[in-house]
Length: 258
Image (cartoon, rainbow, N blue to C red; front, side, top):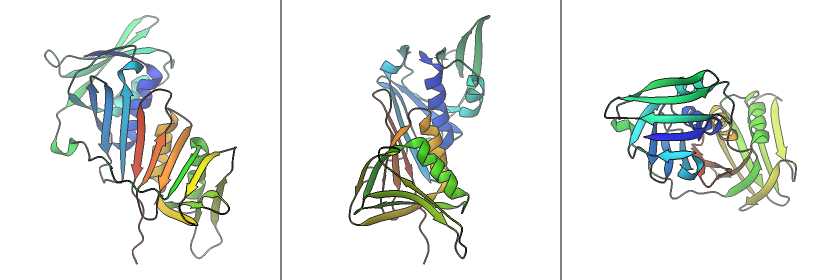
């Protein structure tokens, strides 16, 4: 395998996978790179597709490989985003994955091991029956800021709520028994681009750190995202990419025990 890709895009890909799993499975297929992996505890899932057309050159491996994300990210830190990184794998002569970076002194090559695939590395099933009673299109950085603000009140969970008549999308939190609260309302056209709510009110609660991780991962690709959620159902966050690919995250809800 030998593929060439701009450093900003490769870093964004590895970073997105790293937020979900420290050691992720990368599928360099004929159509492009595909990553589908799930958080160890099953709380979140990523589905990422980068088509072959996004690479400067693309000679795929044709089989999945498992890589540790952290050492790759360390080597990509501080690079010019326009730098081109050459990714190489030769399973016949070496079990390693190599990144070849052009520098003003010549070339810098970083090798990382390829881990053996295990049963737990199997791709999670696709979410085919996704329910969304509220759908919004928002500025991702504004949504991230709202979640961080809500986390200051109560670190476990944050509420997402859509209302109709009048239309309203809010991210909020409150600390029981006190007057501490956080309320972030998104307004058109500043941070809200579209809103669709079934009924008068739809709300659901999600883990702060999970939503933060997902948004932080996606913002490296785009600052526009679509969010779909329903009461006590997983939330779907998808990002509008600058290429014909796919970046979707699913986040499990927090369901209060009665």
